[in-house]
Length: 267
Image (tube, rainbow, N blue to C red; front, side, top):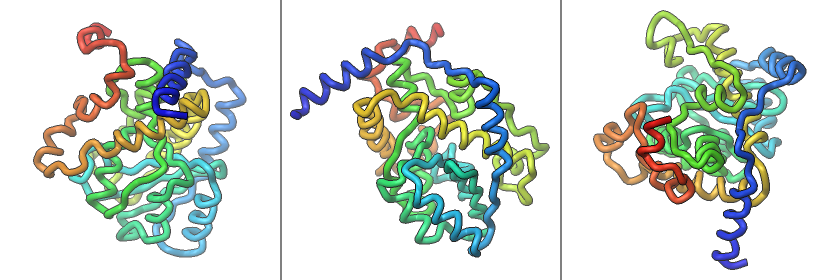
């Protein structure tokens, strides 16, 4: 199949996407989510629990990934890395571990398992400059939402979860900033449940938004390109373009987003 045929196939796939992207949870799904939130493993040293977690992660076809704090990319050191699998949630305390060790780094760089993330451009910049890790095998839920909704509204992950599932994600209401951005220790029970809920719902969002093999392949392609948005930029330039409402890198999505900036401002 040549490139033109591929583009035509993707256009057809986009045309067949549903207009409504809200998938409210039924009672049983909420109960299953609560069960998942009871399976949280905090990892702050290299021991049997650490190696058991890595084995589970490597055995997966798809994992969901969070890095905190990562919103400002390279400008903040890593505090935690959170991974969701079908078996539970692993919270790697990078602050306690000291670094992301080689075996976990290789998993993050590999094409498999697929990594479901949100705002891959910020997370990829963070991992590259803080740990020299080139994130691979990316499915960006932000990119998927933009393609489906034909907009480029800068939904954060909590906002995207509320949009897709109709579930409000309460902000972490800890007293000080170091607790709100997950750099204070020890992590509280409410912080860990919040992180687990976000990463598990991000995992489910992948399943809900992944409409076809053609759509999935295109999201992968665009996600990888989008994740490189800050590559090659100086730190001072990155800082300017990482403001909370920044649309830096979104131009990559313009050809798929039919609504103009003026129309978006009126939403």
